[in-house]
Image 1 (cartoon, one colour):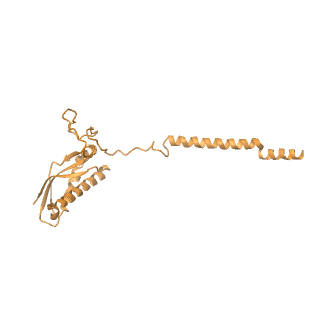
Image 2 (cartoon, one colour; image 1 turned 60 degrees about the horizontal axis):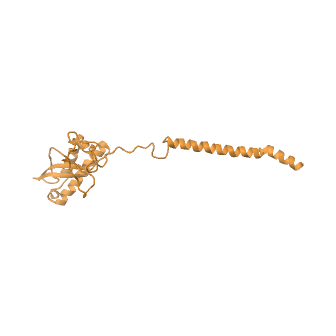
Image 3 (cartoon, rainbow, N blue to C red; image 1 turned 30 degrees about the vertical axis):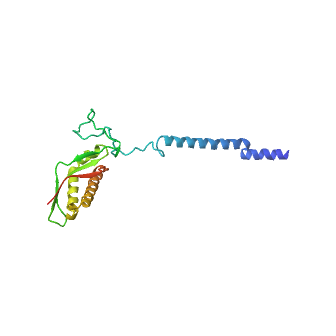
Length: 197
């Protein structure tokens, strides 16, 4: 009997089996509330996942035959039977061009010679890139003239030199666009005319 009384006293002090069950149920309840709260925060986009993160709004590549969502103002949409048919070769993306109306003239580096070029640029991205070229043409002209002035006379007479110049011009134009719009997008510069005097 003394054993039963000691056990009863011990159960009363610690809460006994009923106390243990209450403790376990309390822990399970707290874990459930925590998990439910974490799921609610995740679903609300407070952490983790891609739900609250927007994709940057940058110009996208345009497939051949696909309409440009941002056509240049005044550009005709080709929706009739005369629309171009693209072959299976080459890039699967269409290339759009922008020609600068005025030519560029500059002195050559360390030379009394002059260079005069007529340029166009190309992109495979949507029309926003060419709209930006048009909008920032003054700053782009300045960057192009600076690159021409840094070009040696030997470079302008050499095919490899002209290719390097085109690459530098592409980089300079993209730098202006990145500074002003946060994205470049020009794939190449093309010489429509090239005169050295």
